[in-house]
Length: 404
Picture (cartoon, rainbow, N blue to C red):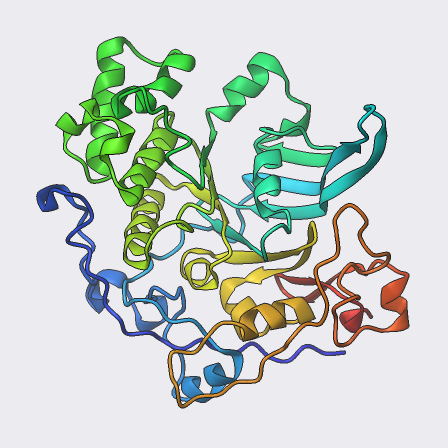
């Protein structure tokens, strides 16, 4: 079955006010709209939805697939080099949590992550999406070895992180840091925020005390705070401010890769745009790579260069962002995109409604794990696990509908 051609996304035109990025507007990051002369040609300009300007017939096309609108801020041109080697390569990653009886006997396992493979290139943002409980956050934690993988390989600059222990793992983690979903629980309420930012430098023995303090104040200023706010406690800040403190803490060791575990899911929409814009600016300045875990498709569409879709612990589809939103192939991806509302009451689109409930990862279905809810399920889907098929350059899908 030949996949349909890619669909161009439409441009959005909503401007986000960023004057209140911090309590002190003078320290806020300048997020003014960028002119064509500053950003390059028309094909290089992108909006908050993460898409280039589309062709004249973009409205008709996108009404069919239901693109997401947000704001009119410009996404910087990516840093990815086509010939670059992957910064991070994940191959066949698995994480199973044992289930034990009251007597301590193992009675089964929760298959949270199953055979997940993807690459992240220097300067790239790889988005990981899916419904709650599909294994997105577990994948991010297993990549960083915060939880030990059950199987698979995680290669970073020639080293398998899954096999590193002790001092070698500690040293490697200085290159990979994490921004957690809940910034309040990741900050010690009894410590000043300056100490929280200095703590990674202290653990890895970077610089003298004065140098660490100077570094912490510099990072606070970079994320929109005054240096004197170094002495305040976490409870004195709002949720968006605490998330920016978490970003500053993750940047303390100058990592090459940030794993962002739903960093804006608990924030208001206006605050989300501030945090996302900050992440993008820092990526441009430092050449960082992001593994961005989220369930908000509008955010992922804006920030990600490539997107992977997870269902019940497996990666069912991955593709460049434009390609995935314009030409979704897997029935589950089509269902996700059809659920995105269109901000136009006069436009109606066809919903792909799934039947049944998500199966338990304690006892996943045989064959394709999606066959119990798939409207196109065949007999082969119930018994044979589908292979990954490259439908187009960079677009992989795991579905029998596209098997050759």
